[in-house]
Image (cartoon, rainbow, N blue to C red; front, top):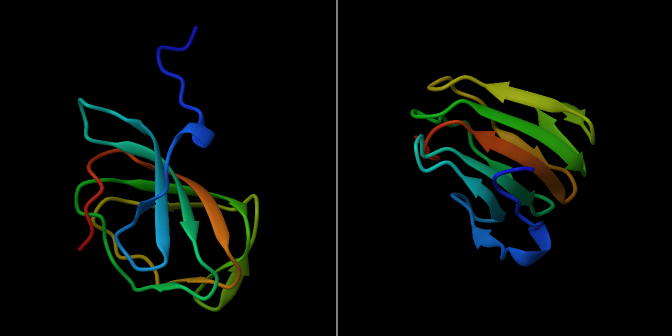
Amino acid sequence: MFHYVSLADGQSWQRGPYAGVELKVLHRNEATGGVTVLRKFLAGVTVPAHTHPLANETAYVLSGEWEESGVPYGAGTCFFAPRGEPHGPHVARTEVLSLTIFDGPLTVA
């Protein structure tokens, strides 16, 4: 049996760190501050280049089309950004839904 179960339908969307980005927190690790989230980018949103100083980020695209460095990526794409490494800008060509894991506190610089 799993120690923790979260149903996405039972969670509310929350404003993300950028306009046009929303999060559903599925799990929060109290020991590390890490979070597993569903992340929604509204169509046309551009998230500027940034870093996460306290966490590695792994993002798996569930639906939609996301552009990185002029290259479009769709469902089934997995991205990894090491802690403190710049990444982005991210461009949502359509509404994008991703499952994203931050292994430490979700901070943005």
